[in-house]
Amino acid sequence: MTLKDWLENDNKFYHVTPKSNIPSILTNGLLRKNPFGICVIRSKNELIIRYLCETMLCDTNAKEFAVIEISPNKHDLKINEIINDNVTEVTSPLHNYIKRYKLIIEKTDIVDDFVMVKLIPNMNEYEKKLVELGLIEKLQ
Image (cartoon, rainbow, N blue to C red; front, top):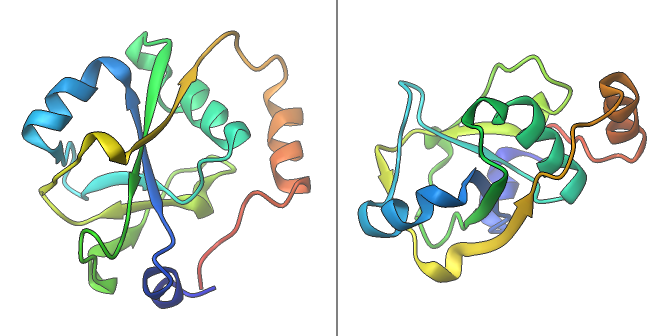
């Protein structure tokens, strides 16, 4: 699938954040925290979210996370606003940035939550499982 197809089909992006950030996000919007844009991932699969929380969000000391859905149609996202992330994790093909300063988020955009229970015991085996299950798809 191409990025153009992704946007035209209104396939969703997801932003994962500690639940403690939700009141601020609902009041102030989802704000860009780095020069590239707002970090998003193109999957809300529980295995992917768990990997993301335990590898990329582990420095927050948070145990409870919220998953925010971002609709390309609702936010009128354009192809030139979506860039690939350059992370080295196995999930890298799923990571993007939305080149905006802010997205307005409503309570209905919070579509899931995730509680981190324990660390992934063997990261190499877990990464292999993600690939074998076909959960990693790169946009063309």
